[in-house]
Every structure is written in structure tokens, then in C-alpha cells.
Length: 399
Image 1 (cartoon, rainbow, N blue to C red):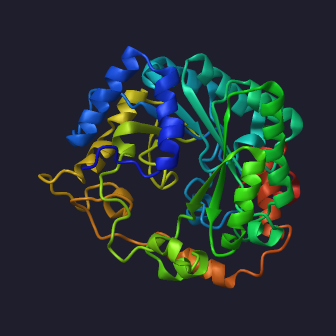
Image 2: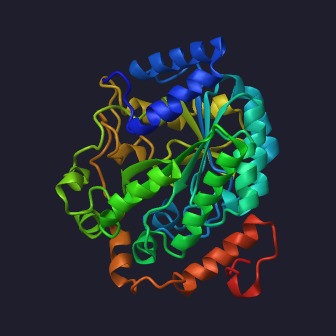
């Protein structure tokens, strides 16, 4: 096992090191050390607490990204979406807040669709002296929102903008307008300069076949804005040659992002099971961030955060990474067939996105508005996120 076992080295120093530098306490350090020892020894029943919280404020989104879990597992939370209950969040902070170095706020929804809720989550987290990271597609950011974002104590903002031209941008960010996304990022940059804030701004540019030629111009614009440009490969099509051929650039630089059948992405065990707690907006915990919809297992309204962290299904998943344990069907899905981390037990790596390939092949050329279905879903999501009456023409049959 390597020293750090981390997949995103750009953020390792900018986020993880900064969280330790600015928000460390002896209590946090001792707990993190115990948790890391448990991770490296593959301890099943962990007696320390997670030191990272991955928090989804709401499940609704204004875009229709085809490889997002909202599309891949479209029915997983069909009647179980929701917005985070602040009372539940306060209880969680009372229980494990003293151990948390970070709270990363995103998930399967767009946090700015209910900015009042997200702003309150940020404020409550900041008061607990916890490092905060927020990820947004930037399309809904206004100058007023940008001012509040910069001034509320947020430490790190991820601006997910994957293109400079409308055609390349909407290839993946279906239903979005690139001019809105770039304007939103610009508003935050201007607010940071105006308020002389120390907030870190990252421009996350997910590279795919449609936007790879725009990287040089993106680098130039990032330097002009004074933001950190993080070029990252598009995820969600691993172990599926059809999807890889459709999405991944063919240049040598990105060839390493293709994975052979049965080959795990990383050569170390899953760190989500030990280091973090993933909390969905419906109040349910999930075993990891990659399969956030499909890996839900416990309702925190009915148990403590530490009980969920050591839930029997989590302990069974941890056993997949212990050489001396033998697990197969009794290990929870999708952990037993996950290909992201190197397992000793379970089943063969499976492709989770087979049905997505056909939807891509059948889909018409992306239109500027993302199509009627995307428009309906965005209108319905916005109404639900705002606690408004859902318009009759966009209601689901159940409503």
C-alpha cells in the first residue's frame, strides 16, 4: 500500500493539506491517525470516526449530464430524493463535527438550485471550524450569489465548466449554456478580488473528445482569471469500450484512461469505507461517492452517524479488502463487483453503464435547450428544490 493512497493529487495539497493547516486540532489529529491506521490494517470494526464528510444538500439538478448517477441509476431515488434536513445535519455535527477536517458539499444535485439551504449549510459548517468545499456547474450563479459565496467563509469552490464553445459544452452538460457557466465563474472571481478573499477557485474541466481541442485556450483564460485549472478525465464509462470510444479523446495523453476488462482503476483499497461518511440529501448514508445512489444503506434519522459508519453492510464491504476473509454474494452490491479499487474478494468487475451506451446511440444531436425531456426535468427539479408548487405540465404520474 502506498503512503497516501489518493487519486486526486491536485486537490491533495490544495484541499487536504489546507484543511489540516487551517483547521487542525489535537482531537482531530489523533482521530485521523487512528482512522488511517484502521484503513491500512483493514480493520472491520473501526473505533475512531470518519474525518471527511461528503454531503449532498439536494438531489435536484438543472442539467442532464448523461454519465451522472442521476441518469445511470435513474430509478434509484425516484421517490426518495429530497433536500437535506438541517436538524439532522445539526445532530450529525454535534456527534462527529469535532473530528471532521473537511465537508465537501456537492453530490447528485446542483447546490445553487436552493442557495438559501446551501448557504445555511456552509455557515453552520464554518462555525464548527471545518474546511468547506463546494462544487457547482456555475450556470445559476448571479453577482449577488457570488458575493455571498465569497463572503460566507467558503474555503474552496469548484467551478465545473467543461468547454468554451456551446457545441462542445452541451455535449456533456446537456441543457446548459456555456455563456451562463463562464459568467457565473467570472462573477465569483470578481467578488473574490473585490472582497480580497482567500477563497480558492478551481476550474474543473472534464476532458472528453468534444472539448479536448479547447484545452490551450482554457489554460490561457484560467491564467487571465487567476484560477487553478484542473484538467480531469471524464468518468462513468470505465470498462465499457463503446462508451470509451464515444467519450474519450484519442490522443496519447489520454490513452491511459482506458481500462481493460477486469482491471481495477486503483491498486489500493477503497478509502471511502474508512476515511469518510457520505450523506445523501434524503438523510441516508451511502458507502461511497462513486455509487452514491446505488450504495445507500442506512437512514440517519434512525441511527447515529457512528452507527452508520460501522453499519453491518459497511463492515461486510470492508472485508472485501482483507486477504483472510472470503466473501462473495454476501458482500453488498455494488461493492462486491466494483472496479475502482483493488479487492481480494467479491465478483468480477462489471460494467455499470451498458444501458447508457444505447441511449447515447439513440439520442438525437444535442439541441441548445437539451430537448423537451431535459427541459421538463429541469423545471420540475427547480420547483421541488425551491419548495414551490410543481407545474401541472411537468408533474410525474405519482404527483
